Length: 102
Image (cartoon, rainbow, N blue to C red; front, side):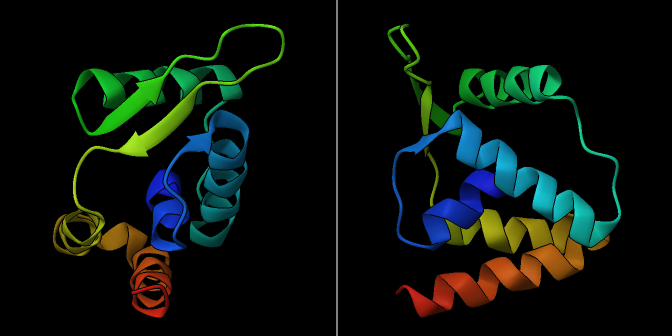
């Protein structure tokens, strides 16, 4: 969801750290214990392997991996609302953010 938030603001390719930072903020809003940075990066890789995100490998020397949504952002937001009531507040924020940048 945090990569989706960045895309809904008009960003396309997002580095790992801003995605993780936004993820922590969303966990706080929903009162969820966040994953560790390492586990979160594993999940990003899983999403990349599942063709939900497209990963551009960082080339060392402090360069981070970058991610892009490989699916339509509207589809992601709609699926979140239908499949997971627990994230209702964050989904509503995503929907509002997406409407602002269209």
